[in-house]
Image (cartoon, rainbow, N blue to C red):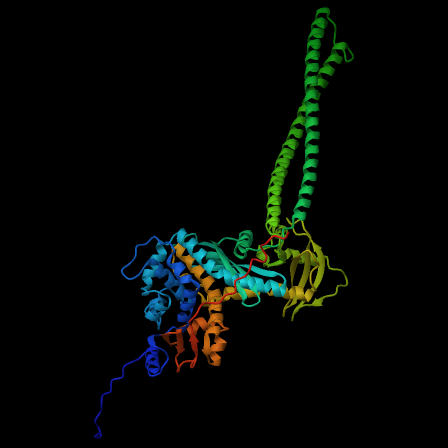
Length: 614
C-alpha cells in the first residue's frame, strides 16, 4: 500500500448476543439453533415457569381489556413479572435500558409468548386491572408456590421440631407533594414521617431456603404495626394450612374470672336496686305523712285562730309544724339519695352490659378456639417473632391464646425504665452479645395482657451511654438461657434482610405505576420473585451439565442472579433432548451449560399433619 494512502474499513457493531450466535454457529450443539439472548437467567426462569404451569395460569387471569394487535393483555402481566425478575427499577426500563427485555424476542419465547410490548402498553393494562385480576394473580402465585412451601415446612418440622415465622412492617414512600397515589397518607416510615403506604410482610424461617416470603398486605401510610398483626397471623395460617394448638384452658380461666366479676357486678346492682326501692318507699311514706301533717297543721291553725290561742314553742301546733318539716326534709333527702343511687346504678348497668358483651365475645372466641383444636388433631409448635411495634398487650394476649410461642420486644421504653427500678442490689449481668448484657426479670404483666410474660432486661454499652431495652417471651415451658434467648430474637433480622432484598433487587423500593391495583400487582410479583429465583436456582443446579466456579457461586446469590446473570448473553438451543442454554464463552460464566429439558421435580408432601388419630 503506497505511503499516505488510507483504506476505509467499515466496522459494524455487534451485540454480545450476535457475537455469541457467531461463536456457537460453528459448533455442533444440537439439531437446531433457535436463538440468542442477552438475558440468560430470564430464559432459565421462563422455562422453569412453564414447567410449573405458572405461565399457563397467568394467561387465564381475567383482565377487562380487549386483545391488542400484538398480544393479549395477560402477556403484559407476564411481561411485568419478567421485568421484576430481571431487576428493572422503573417500568420504562423494559424498553429503555441498555439491553431491553421488551425487545428480546428470545425471552418472550422462553415465557411462551409471541412478543413483549412497549412498557406503555404494560402500564395501560395495569391501569384497567381490577380486584378480580388481583385475586386471580394472588391465587395463581400461591398455587404455584404451595408445593415448595409445604416441602420446606415438612423439612423444617422434621429437623427442628417447630416452625418460626416473622412479621414486619415496611414503608413504601411516594413524593410528599404527589396527589396521584390513591389512599397514600403520611405516616412513620424509615425512622421519619413520609407520605406513602405500609406493607406488612410475612416470612417463614426454613432449613433449605433460610427464608420464604409468604404474604404481603397493603395499608395506608398512617397505619401502625399493631393494627396489622392479627390479619397477618391469620394469613400465615391460611397460607401454611398449619397452626399451633390453641390455649383453650387460658381462655376458660379468663371466662371463669369474668363470670365472677359479672356475679359481683350483679350483686352490687341488685343491692343498689333494693336500696333505690327502699328509698322510693320512704319517699312515698314521707310524702303521705307530710300530706297528713299538712292537713293537721291547717286544722290546728284554724282552731287556734278560732279560739284566739297563741302558738307557743311547745304547743301542739308547733310540734305538728316540726313533724311536717321533718317529713318534708326526709322526702328531699330520699330524693337526693335516689338520684345518687340512680347514677351509681346506671354506671353499674353500663358495666354489666360491657361485661356481658365481653362474655358473649369470649364465648364466641372460646368456641372458635375449641373448633380450631378439633379440626387440628396434630398441631405444631409455632414461634412468632415480632418487633416492638406489634407488641401491644391486646396483641400479646391474642397471640398467646392462639397458641404461639411469642418472642418480642417491649412496646414502650417506659417498661425498661420500670424494670430498672426493680433491679435487685447487687445484680449479676450475663453477657449475651458483643456489647450487650442481660438479666432475667421473671414474670412481667403488660397492660391489657392478663398473662405473665417472661422479661429480659438488656443493657447496651454504647460509646456515650448505657441504653436499656426489654425482650419479652411467652411459652408453655421456661425461657431458654439468656444468650440463646437473645440470639433467637435477633435472628428475626432474616425478615429485615428479606425486605432489604425486596427493595434493592425486586422493585419494592419504588412504585412502577400509580394505579392502585397495578401497585398491588407489583408488590405481589416482587414478593413471589424473591422465592421464585431461589427455586429456579435449585432447579438450574440440577440442570447443570458443566459450569465454572463463578456460576456455581452465583446460584447461591439472588442479587447476582438478578443483576448479573439475568443480563448475561447465552445461546438457547433446542434439540431432540430438550432445551440447552450455553453461556457466552467471553462472559463471566463461560463454559456453563444448562440442560433445561424434563420436568420440575418437587417432592409433594403427604398430608401427615392433617389426619385424625383414632
